[in-house]
Each structure stands twice: as structure tokens, then as C-alpha cells.
Image (cartoon, rainbow, N blue to C red; front, side, top):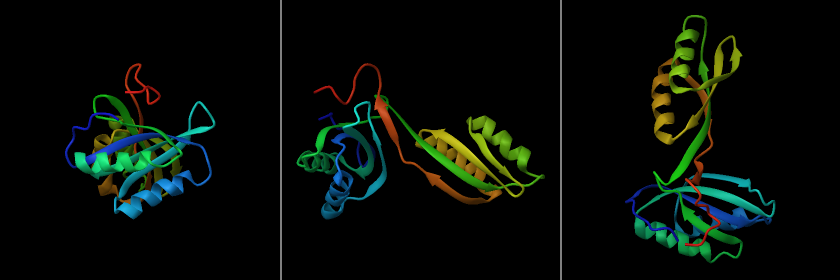
Length: 173
């Protein structure tokens, strides 16, 4: 288990689990039974198709996070858990935002996208769909700049990431 140092903030846990039916249900059930809220969750297969990686963002202090990790390790399908700590890991989110746009403001929106390295992925007469990838702070700042134009809808993936350097979730600690 990684050393836990942050206090009552969004914490990002990376889990390797067996790619079995119902594993996500058992993990989310553990959170609900214990009264913990999942802030964000992403799931995907790894380089080994029998193993999936689940990235869970949760809020809590060191004691809460330690308790969550202990409970998760009790599940048979859980292989390994590490915390993706700031500075020690790359964490990113993917967001699509549909924003009101017309001939009078489209150039301003595109200029903001260029500043944030966001992409315009769909153009319609009355809207644009924007794509941005980055840490939560970058995405939050982008939202603040785009909000005045009128956000129609958006979808936010939640964080996913990997530890920096040669370290990996596969290593024992």
C-alpha cells in the first residue's frame, strides 16, 4: 500500500482487478455499504485482457482512504491498489462540452480552445462540441472561460492515470 499523505481531498486510487463479471458491482457495492461516495470512476482493460484497471476518485482523509483500501483488498477480484499521488503520477480527465455558438461568438470560443489546447470536434449552426484533456484544475479553468457562452451539456470521464517513471501498479511495495 502506498503511503498516504493528503488530507481530506480528492484522492485517486488505481486498482488492478480480475476482468470478471460483477467485479465493478462488488466494488461499487462496497462503497455504498460503507457510506463512501465515489466522485469519479473509470474502467478499462489492461495490456493483459484478463485484468482490468479501475481508477476511483474519492474524497477523504488518510484514515478514510486507508479504510477503503483495506476493505477493497478483502474482495477476491482485487489484485493490487496504489494511490496516484500528485507529482508521482500523471492524472487526466477527458471532457466533451457542447456550447452555444453562432457566427458572432464562434471565433472567441475557438480562441479560448487554442489557449487551453482543446479541440473543436463537431460544428453545427448553433453549437460546437469541444474536447479537452487534462488535469482537473485545467478543465475547471476551461469551464469558467466557456460558461458565459452557454453550456448546453457536457460529459466528464473522471480521472485516469499512471504512476510516473518506471514504477507501476504491478510492483510490490
